[in-house]
Length: 277
Image (tube, rainbow, N blue to C red; front, side):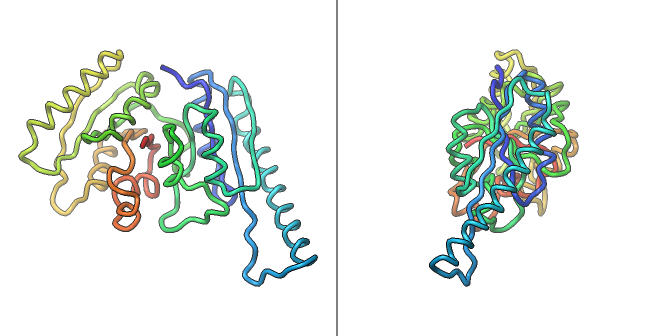
């Protein structure tokens, strides 16, 4: 159970320090290599012209992006330093999500930052909402206030879905290094309590077969509290440094319109979150 290669996605116009520190921490814990990746696409202005003037404008814009990508590479190498078994950098002039998704084939886990609420700039940001849906790799979302990967207590947010099963499997290398693992399910129906306990007992036993000691906790949402808020409250109560969860149990359209636990975890979380789809 290990990660041999960590990939970290950097943003042009967002802070990158936290995700770089966590990526470096991951590499040091697993003696892994790190690949830094970043991309951006030139955005023509609304008054875009044609001919030689247009070509000059494009060249200036792309030149500025290349300079920014070079700055990001320098930051990547400076922050990660010698903590990785190997170090490499990939960048390009392309839509960030498309570029990062293409590179994800080279890594075991993808590290990125949290997304600001609302719509993101597809020309400058590889949104975690897109990455988790299509990367085919576990995605570690790092909020800007985090400086290291705290594995003192890990909360596994369980739900009877394929995404949750995949997430806990993807997280096995991290769970094996955790001091305390708590598997939590938040009830949607109080009458389901006994069945919920049985599910969690199975998950705890399965983790035990992987030599990971875990405990189970059944929670009810509480009056006037949605599942995302309850999950945050439980994570705070446990002082969890990492939450492991399946991503997008409903359709992507419903998540975007109505919000949801996944939307909350990639935009408003105060701790690292490992998501799998």
